[in-house]
Amino acid sequence: MPTFNYWSIAFASVGIPIAIALIGLAMRGSLPRRLMIGLAGILALPFGLFSGCAAMEAPELGASDISFELLSQVEAGDEAYRLYRTDCGATCAFGLVLRKERDWWGIVRSTTPVWSLYRADQGEVLLVDRKLKIMSGGAVLAEVAL
Image (cartoon, rainbow, N blue to C red; front, top):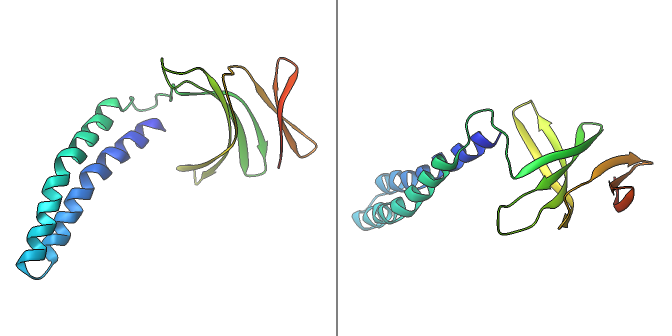
């Protein structure tokens, strides 16, 4: 869920300077305490700006991630192999990314990139004899063993 990804980054960015300040307050001795609180103050501005950017860019709840468009998928046990068309914006071409994905308790999804190809926009993944075949227009782009 892209919305949660953006908001977790926003909260973590704010939380880092706060955690440093709290550690500083718990320290004994005035010099270490002042150094930690000073470091927290210095980090507060860039981390706060980063947090604000993440919060402003967060899509609405339930929105899909436009940079990864699902083209095809196959299931292999508890894991799914999903082929995505990637779009990083106006400065680059489309690409294909095959990722191994596993859902944990319906809350967290772990992903592992398996294969990618830059400058491609169509494809399909097929499971044939314990091998994944990435096809495009009848041609085999790649084979990946499971």
